[in-house]
Length: 198
Image (cartoon, rainbow, N blue to C red; front, side):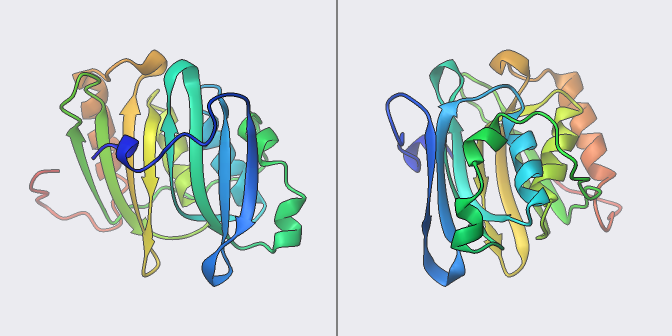
């Protein structure tokens, strides 16, 4: 599945963010700018440290490292969110929030099958603040970064899909794929003896 069909550019140029109230006490955060490598991991860590939970959304890397993101967040009031400079957080490299250990219920790792030959990682895990930050930190440890991401939460379960590349947008090699698969197996909450297709 390609996010191009689900996410249209927020703006042709420039940078910025906006946040607006949405349904069920949530807020829609829209963010666009040229972002540094690994920004999404730093960003999710920073918002988690402010008790803001990303419930759903999409983020997409365009040409020249220009990103657009639409994220539904909860856990803070409109007044609290209005005091957060989300664009500054996207460019913040360090944070004081300790991410929880990565724990997965299931995962599926495949290839995109297109010219980019990205790794497509589908994960399911208990939803909690800091989960996405811990997942992205785990991937960064293998020098893997998302080009696209789709975040969903259903009945307190995170159901996320990430399209991963190496630095510079290069397709990850088979050695990295094997290392990622082994590391994710170690993060399964319950490790079955057989994992067909995993």
